[in-house]
Structure formats: C-alpha cells, structure tokens
Length: 524
Ligand code: NAP
Image (cartoon, rainbow, N blue to C red):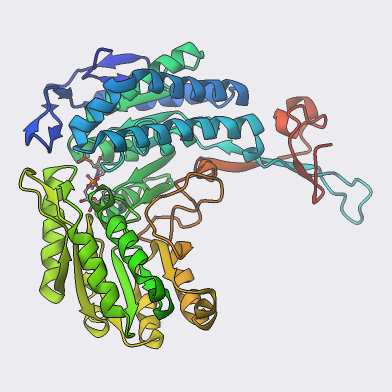
C-alpha cells in the first residue's frame, strides 16, 4: 500500500503547508525517508468543521453500523500485514515481536468495543415511570441514557505507536460511542499512523460513515495541538504522554469559554512494597522485577519506578539476586534520541542522591541504549527529596530501604497519584499491614498483590487511571470497555412521547437491553 505523507481531513488528503518533518530510526541513527506535511491552521480548522458536521449524522448511526465500522477498521489493519509492522519497527526501534503484540492488542481493542456495541449496555438506560396519582405532586416519567459528547481530539502516544495512537484505545472508544475523532499524530511515528489512517478511511467509506468522522493531522510542534484543544467545535480530549504536556493541554481546555474534559494519562512511578514475608521467594521476585523494570526499555506507564523494602535479614540476598538478574539482560534501544536524553537527565538527578547498585548489560551497537539501572536510597533521604518521587521514563528503579512499615506509611502518603500500587507478601502479612494497604489504596487506581505492574490486561474490570498526575480524572479508565464513558454524557427525557424517544428508552425495548426500571433490572 502507498504510504501517504499528507494530512487526512475527512475523506480528503491535503498538504497545503510548506513545513515538513521526518521521523527517526533510533537503530540506524538516521531519519526515515518520508517527509510529512505539517498541517496548517486552515487545515486544522477544516478538520474540526468537518468533524462537527459529521457528528450530526454520526451520533444518529445505529449500534450495529458503528460495530461494523470498528470491525472493518480491525480487518483493514490486519490486512496491512508486515508493511505496517516493519514501518512500526523503523519508527520506534522496537522489536518485531513487540510490533506484533501491540498490533494484536489494537485489533483486539477494536473488536472489544464492537462487542460492547453489540450489547449496547454502555447506554445505561434508566427509567422511572410516571405516577399521576402521587400526591400532592404527580410523578413525571423520566428516562435517562448516555449520549456522545461530540468531536474528540486524540494525541497519539510516543510509546504506543499502535495501541494508544491512530486507531488505539482513545480513538476506538470515542468512535464506538458516536464521537468523530481528529488524531494529532505523534511526530515520532507518522508513517505508522499514516498506514493505520488509510485503514480507517477505507473502513469509513466501506461502511457508509460520514465524511469527517475521522481525520489525521501531522505536526512536530505544539501549535497544532493547542489550536485543536481551543477550537470550540472540539468537545473532549484524549492524551497519553508527559505530565507537562498533559497539564498544559488540560489548562488550555479549562480556560476556554466552554471548558471541556481532557483525559490525560501521564506520569506514574508505580510503587511496589516488598514485605519481609515475600522474600521467602526472593529469587523468583528478583527475576520477575529485573524483567519488569527493563521490559520495552522501561518505556511503559506501569514501569515499577519505586521499590520500597522493609529491612530484614533476607533483603541483601534479594538485592544481590536482583543485581545479578539485571546484569544478564542486554540494554535495548530507546524510542527516540529525545526520550533517551530525558532518561539520562532523570538518571543523573537520581544519581545525585542515591547509589547505583545494579545495571543491565551495555550494548555498544546502540546509539540510544536504555540501560536498566537500580539505585538505592534510605527512607529519610527519599522522604526529603521530592525530586526522587518523580517518574524517570525508562528502565530505572529506585529501591528505598525502610526500617519498618511505620516509617513507610507517611512516605506512601506523600507520593503523588499513581496508576498502580503493588504489595509483595503473604495474606497474613497483608492483614498485619492493613493501614499501609489503606494508604496505598488512596494513591492508586489499581492495587496488585504478588505481581508486577507491567502488563495491562485489556478487560472490563481494568482501571487504568489514578489520582493526579497519573491521570487528570481518576474517575475514568483509559483501558477497557469502560473507557467509552469518557466520551459520554447522560441526558434525561421527561414525559417525552414514546415515538420520539431513542430506541434504548422506548416502552417496547426494541434493543432488548437490560434496563433499570423503577430501580429493578429488567429486559421487559
Ligand atoms: P509529550 O512531550 O507529552 O508529547 C505528547 C504529545 O503532546 C505530542 O504530540 C506533543 O506535541 C503534544 N504536546 C506536549 N506538550 C504540549 C503542549 N504544551 N502544547 C501542545 N501540545 C503538546 O510526550 P512524549 O513526546 O511522548 O514523550 C516525552 C516524555 O513524556 C517522555 O520522555 C516521558 O517522560 C513522558 N511520557 C510518559 C508516558 C507515560 O505513560 N507515563 C508516556 C509517554 C511519554 P508535539 O510532539 O507535536 O510537539
């Protein structure tokens, strides 16, 4: 398939601007061959106009038609085959196995949302029937369901060129509920994005979706993203990236005449607490953690950045094994020179206050190696240095030695919000550490017992979001079917004539949904 370097605006390709940029291959240390056209302000405006127009039609499409659209996207991405995967590798330096896994996840997510449309339960139809005889005031008939909020801007993530970019979770969840999407492609992988864009364009045309249901805009500067977030036709934003980027866009959105929600998934250090009882299995935990810290060169939002250990006689053996396991793992390339640079900067900051205790094997052949590193610090130094609490995006973990649980509790309390918190121990040890568990619970979106935080299952019960700065709104998840809720708002119909009600609320229940009627779940 031909790789297009223009912007896609609805059903038309466009390259009106004179500015161009290229993506970069960190393995060859050279730019990739394609030159992408930076979208102009006028092209950006056209995309939002088309999205607003498309919303009028798209929000009325049936669950079945949108489900067909999502399945067609999934099929078209599958059909891109090795071309897509090879392009992904050229733009990320990631291995073919990771490309295959992430592509499968992207397709699985699209199919998951299509299934959610087949069931239709995300509409949450709720009915309180009228009681004209109620005294002194007769009760009205009220019927509520979720409806789409409008055109959404999605910022592609640098670390997930497929699963959290062009047709990733944010896009798929928004398209599922009836919101048109404009993707601000991440400049580290525009070619990967362009191929996926073609798959979406074809799917939209194959399934009769309106012009403007999807656009893909390229840029390597902040202006385009800022213009999109400030455009009054945009009604919501999905973002994955840095705390500074997410916060800047969130503030722009809140300063609009009509503020809109920004669901930004940002930094997390994912604290892990190693209770002494866990060290009966210290070898296996050391192995699991050496691999979790270095997985994908640590470029995951769930990377275990902080490991809190309680002093006990087996701790030194655990640390020795962790060092040994880490030293057997070879460094892989990081995604981009800028990410490598910021990793090295973060590492230098940690090194000012902590001691390096273990590293993965170097790799001379790489220009931008993400060398796995473990540092150690005592609890009071950690407590007094808030910079050590910050995420260092890459394969780095800071091991904090605490005298006892009492010393650890206020430290956990002082941490910023996190996506995950993990406890390694036994069930009886957890029982004794109940205060610690409560404190950890208050800081995180997902609590893990005896596991590693990396590896985010895509399923309905997954919560991928947490108190700020893990995400801007901890009430929502960025992963799983419930991520659709970010793009919905409830509307109530009062005494509305049945023939004009949405199908999900009609008396005959033509969609056969479970509905909460007068506080009873029923399909009647
Ligand atoms: P980023 O710098 O936050 O950029 C993400 C996207 O947001 C890009 O498209 C960028 O635009 C845009 N953007 C950022 N700041 C903006 C602003 N002030 N106004 C308008 N648009 C803005 O993240 P990144 O490029 O993925 O990586 C940089 C760093 O972010 C990493 O080193 C890492 O520390 C962190 N990061 C964290 C996670 C995580 O999951 N925790 C994931 C990815 C990255 P342009 O690129 O067009 O300039």
